[in-house]
Image (cartoon, rainbow, N blue to C red; front, side, top):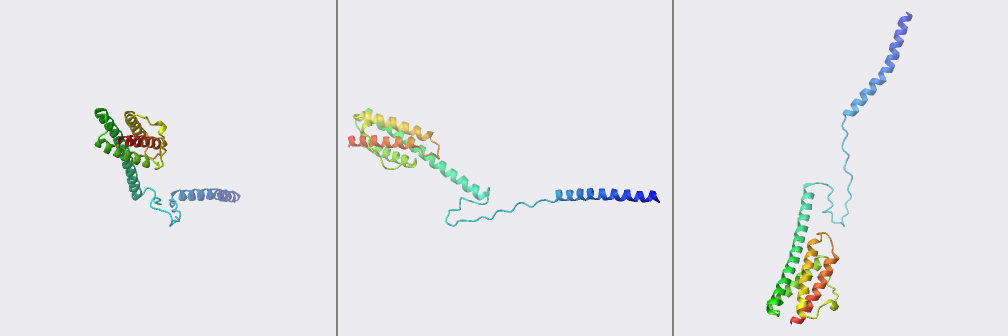
Length: 194
């Protein structure tokens, strides 16, 4: 009888020790299998005074991606037009220079080219972030018409290089300064040719 009592006690103690271990294992396995719900979206408070078309709360949505691609494409198009204008400025200056070397005078076609050259240069300056306020720095302008025309050509080529080497989202003070200097020389050439 004593032996049975001891066996019962041992069994009870063993059950008391094993039961919490079994329960802990069961709870752990159930919690590992239960999927956790995804975090809920935070409440978005919209400010009606702001343009929220660019602030799409659905990051990565097809509409936002399409809008972003279109904006990038439009910026690239504007930049390409800006570079094309700079190239045309350089070509017009070269044509005026070649015409002057050939005829030793500016023709009416050269006057039209000068007008176009001035208009494109102003557009380049404005697109680069410049304004219409010019300094008429006459100290840097050659007195001879032929030298002025050569200077217009070299400055137009330099302007083209500056525009081509400036990234599209950068406001370049060098481009604005070069365009202003070129405009000053163009106006002096037009003043003599009239």
